[in-house]
Image (tube, rainbow, N blue to C red; front, side, top):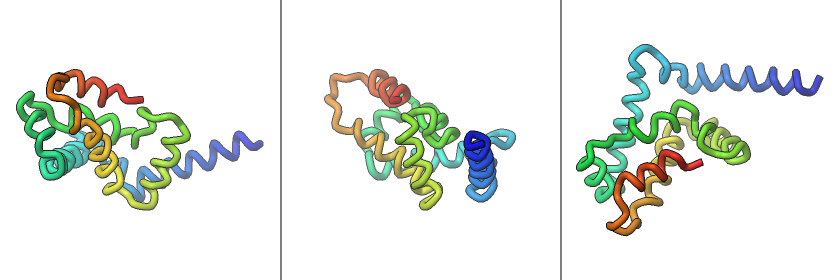
Length: 130
């Protein structure tokens, strides 16, 4: 009985997130909303982490490369369940600005890396951060 109740709650929460928080738009044909969010993240990186932005531009890497799966899964793919639940809680309260801020926060962790570490190594660490 309890498992069925949890499944029911999970379903209704999923539906609420898809409709009220417009997550369903990310999956529409052409994924234009996802591209728009990635563009916004690129702009935030350019403004707040200009040295990383320059490096990403040098290697022609944009936010679609490393942030798409974070955004599409609302970070549930990349973090442990207990962290994912907290991220979802924050998303339900603060909506999309929270997700953009979280991406920016993660990228901020990499701005102090020594110059000798290649961008590719940094990006691999960002993309595979579980």
